Image: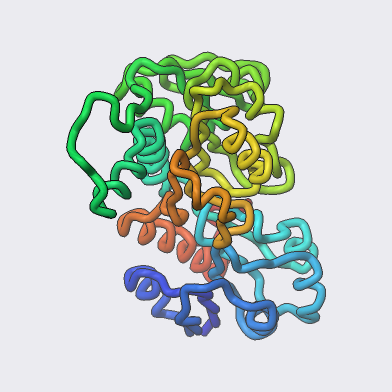
Length: 316
């Protein structure tokens, strides 16, 4: 019987799918410590980690002889795992693409609407008991219908956002992608991120995390955006240079931001927390029960494939 180390609590359906094997569950919601992960690598055949469970090269080296053969990551993003170092130590790495596309795209629209229409400000006003009643100039926001959305990264999630924006709100779609793409929605591919920023009223970041996209959106992109424009990030926090974003917001260079991820999460800078024109969510992109179950089952599918000697379902 193989041993599987599970770093967090997951829906019951996910753990039930591993019932034929010995499961060691770390029944906590916080990231696993370095010592815990080193022990897991030495004592288990597979590990089911997720965002925040850090596997850098030095940790893998410190683990010495590694028994584990697979890191079956729960999530699409895997920038918390040094994949090259893992492979060098005989560890395969998988992720869970495809199953969280709609949930994450829905949340992008949530952030677009909440930020453009100042819904967070309005909710706080009412909750604090400070609303004095309707008047013609209170909390005037930006109408989303008919605007131009610029999408950075036209993968599965980027296309799903584009469909919602175009067909749901009549928006023009422009996008930047490293390779040529022909999405199934009317959209124009532009040759740079700055070109997208100049053309768009709303810029949505939807690229994978990792070294190649670290600070992909920085001061130059923010400077290219108009003072009425908003930035939405549902990708990974470090894709956006957080210091540059704060500076742009404080200077009125852009009108607002909608953020589900942060550069050093769960830490969120006080400067962002005190800004009324910024919508802040606690990394809810895939947070529907259906999606989290599907993510877990895909991770388990990879684990079972390994144990059965079959090809991995979604290797990275």
